[in-house]
Length: 119
Image 1 (cartoon, rainbow, N blue to C red):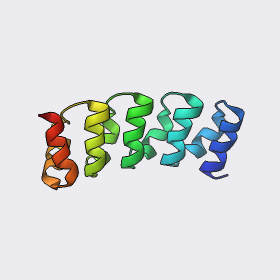
Image 2 (cartoon, one colour):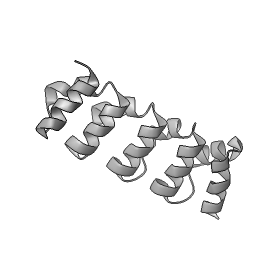
Image 3 (tube, rainbow, N blue to C red):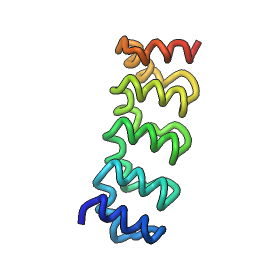
Image 4 (cartoon, rainbow, N blue to C red):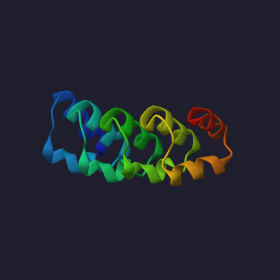
């Protein structure tokens, strides 16, 4: 069974299916959806895969954790756009120094928006 199939089965039933969680946890996207719509909270065994994807790390922090999620910050920091969104929507201000410095040095359009946000 593939992660998306395992996720769809649990979503259809509207509840956790513990025997399918190891399958779901191998995919960042379906781990995120499982946390958001089925568990409605943290999906600990899926976090290592979520933390390898900037987009889903940002969304997991914003919509599931509803706050700073340090495990996802290294991958988020590699993407200027999601670093900016993370600062704006999750941190609601200045990023941790290692993320702040990476974003500023990126010279991306998002860096300019970030500077405006923190001033």
